[in-house]
Structure formats: structure tokens, C-alpha cells
Amino acid sequence: MHTNQLTLTEGSIWKGMLLFALPVFFGNLFQQLYNAFDAWVVGRFLGDTALAAVSSSGSLIFMMVGFFNGVAMGAGAVISRYYGARDYDMLKKAIHTVTALGFIAGIALSAVGVVFTPTILRWMRTPEDVLPQSITYFRYYSYGAVFVVLYNVFVGILHAVGDSRHPLYYLIASTLINVVLDLVFVGVFRWGVGSAAMATTVSQGISALLCCIHLLRSQEVYRLEWKQLRIHRSSAWDILRVGFPSGVQNSVISIANVFVQSSINTFGAAAMAGCGANSKLEGFVFLPVTCFTQALATFVGQNLGAHRYDRVKKGVRFGLICCMLLAETIGVISYILAPYLIGFFNNTPEVVDYGVRHMRTMCLFYCFLAFSHCIAAIMRGAGRASVPMYTMLLCWCLIRVSYISLALKVVNQLETVSWAYPITWTCSSIIFLIYFLKVDWMHSYDHPKSAKA
Image (cartoon, rainbow, N blue to C red; front, side):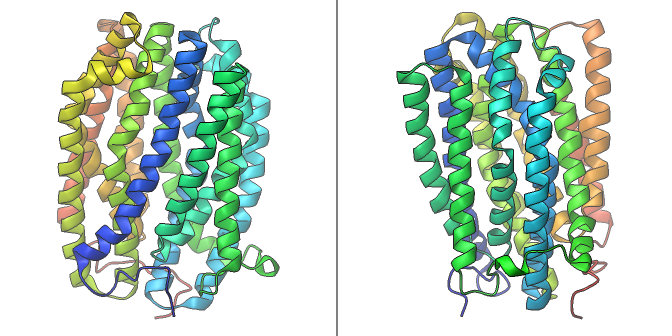
């Protein structure tokens, strides 16, 4: 009897998706709150330069963990299809394979981050007055990269079988721990930006550990067992076939964002701090996007695995409409409240000015951002992760980088960089819409080769 997971192949579509999506929403809300709290503590207690150092590391952090998180999302899509098809033998093999891959990848990622931090930050043209603190912050964060990778692997497993409640509980616990450690390390002892990163590392390690313990103690079909932890070749192929394009998608986006960040860095520490505050706030915009995209990927995977094509159509329509409406509503609110939102992190007039200009250029186009992410999730759930990979590579990497390289030579202003986002969101939305309407992506559904017919 499966008591903790939600089977999305039966019952009310809207109720099932909301029951899955709401815990994801609150989980991401807590995650963004503690990310925002990090920035608030650093900005208030350590000053503009420290906030700029933390902000400049955001794109680099996403670049490091983005590929492996994409692989974890791809693994979740595969697992959800096995679960929908009730192929529990392949389900178990996939779970143990992706966990083993996560351990190996996380350790390697930590090592790379610690060793190559100064080189990468200099390549990003981080200002000399910010560079020392950026190196310190990113190196301390890198020590915990293995926890980030494993947490995303474990959450991907739980989400794939419909359990979005337990990740929420564990994330709430780690958020509270992070808040306390931030106040103690930075606010009381004033240990600097390195201690803020260490607080994050400790909290992420605890959330990964709690997820791992839950999977080890579970009596469900997705139980994790140490003795079965190995890389099964057939499962690894299925996972990488979907996960590799998702990982590449995340990587090209993050590489482009690193280029964007390096362009922002040329405007100085105030611009870095203002845009960094906006990036923390923008994370809240992703809350409805993230919860519905994860719900859509799991819903599509389970129902296509069970050959419930009628449910797929209705669920996709519901998810797209809700996600776009929520994202645009938040965009309008962000435009109106921009000075107050940026000022919450840092009330220096120059920092607020840069942050408001950056935010208001982008926030009214959040509906296109939501649409692109939703279609990418739908295609990933359908086993067609190469579609969003190529689309993001073209629009969010090549076009974005080319635009900035050329446009800044003509108009050297922050808004020129900011416009790169809405332009490329719109381009990807047009391509996704054409593919979504013209291609029979459901009935040409590519089942995992190892799955039962």
C-alpha cells in the first residue's frame, strides 16, 4: 500500500496536480526565503562589497550544480514513467543507479569548485575589490556541493513517485537551521561571507541526510538499500538519455547567465549588488513556475507510462494556464513594488536604482518565462528532453550572448543587458509553441527501452 506518494494516473486531474504542486511550492518558498535571508544578513551586517561577492557567485553556483540537477530531473522523469507503468524492478534499478551517480558526481563537483574558483571568478571579470570575498564564499559553498547534488537526486526520486510532502518537511527544517546559523555566524560573530556559505552548506547537508534516511527506512517500492547501490547499465542509459539533455540545457543556460553576470560586473559593485538582490527576488517568481513544472513533468511521465493520453491533454492545459497567470501576476506586482523589494536587501540609493532598473525591464515578461519552462518540463516528462535542450541552446545561450556582445557596443547601459532576458524568453516561447502544436509528441512517446510493454 503506497501511503506517502500521490498516484497521478487516477482521480481528479486538477486536485491531484495541486496536491502535488502545493508542497513543492511551499518547499521552494522556504528555499528562496533562506536564500534571500542569506543576502539580507550579508548585505545588512557585512556591507555592499560582501553582498556583491555573494551575488556574483549565484550564476557560477548554478553553472556548477545545474548539469547534475538536470540529470536528476531526467532521472525523475524516467522513474515516474516506470512508476506509472508499474515496472517496479526497473524502478528500483533506476533509483539505485541515479543515487550512485549522484555520489560520484557530487564529490567530483566539490573538488572542481574548490580548486578552480579563483580562475573562474577572474574569467567572469569580478572586480578586484570584490574578488577576495567572492573566492572565499564560493570555495566554502563548494565544500557542500555534494550535498546539493544528492539532495536534488533524493527529491527527484520522491517527486517522481508523487511524494512532495516529505521534501517539504526536510526543507523547512534545513531552512530554520540556516537562518539560525546565519544570525550566529554573520550577525553575532561577524565571521564574514565564508561563514554565510558554511551555514548554507551545513543546512543543505542536513536536508540531504534527512531525505536519505527517509528513503532507507521506507517500506514502499522506492526504498533505497545500500547493498543494491550500483550503476546498472540499462538504467544508466535510460537516465542519461533523458537526463543528459536536461543537464546540458541547465548548463547552457547557466553559462549564458555567467556571461550576463560578467557583463553586469563591468558596471561595478553597486550594479552587482542591485542585480543580485533582484536575482534573489526573482527566485520567488519561479515558485509557481517550479511547482507546476515539476508537477507537469511527473504528471506527464506517469500518465504516458500508463497510456492515459486523455489525462495528459487536460493536465497540460491546466498546468500551463495556472503557471502563466501566476507568473504574470507576480510580474506586475514586482514592477509596482520594485523600489521597496530591492531596498529590503540594501537601501543604498545607487544599489536600489540599479536593481529597480534591472527588475522593471524584465518582470512584465514573466509569462513567457513560465511558458518556456512548462513546455520544457512537459517534453522532459514525455522523454523528449532534447527538444528543450536545443531550444535553450539556441535562444537562451547563443542568441542571448550574441545580443549582449553586439548591443553593449552600441548602448553601454545596464538595461541593455537586462533586455537579453525578455528577448530570449519570447524567442523560446515561439519555438516551443510551434513544436507543441505541430508535433504529435504524445503518441510518438518514446518509452524507456527497458520498460515493460
